[in-house]
Image (cartoon, rainbow, N blue to C red):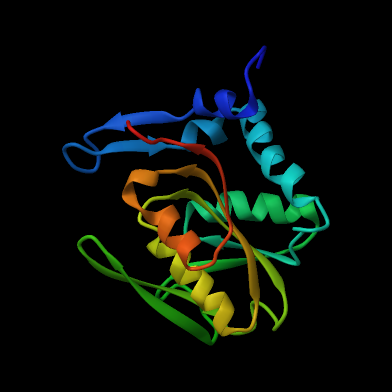
Length: 184
């Protein structure tokens, strides 16, 4: 990490896979951030140092299916707060609330257990990246249906040209991302 900022260091470990899953798409693969113990620690610490601040410390961390589970569970553990998964429809065994959102090619539904959060809980909502914003928006709506307050949405990567971060901020959600890949 000599003379590199945390953001530069993390950016150097994100793999770009051209033409996946479709021609013209530059896929930002975060798995190299997880494979190396030092890089993974730097990544998690970047979130922990932010959310240790009492003014934005959550009561609960909610992670979006599936890579948000990896980040969210570790962040929750390090902050000594609970973790709740927001899953794709049909994956949770107990009573759920659900939210459907639009994708470029159709729609998807995510679910949350009805007892996952309590009214008034301050929740950090986390995922690996923000593209169109649909998944994070749906997660926020689910948490709010149960009376929780989403204090911030967090992600490693923002892809601002896809409009998701603008849409989320316009809805009133504060966002924190470590990196953006604009103009690439």
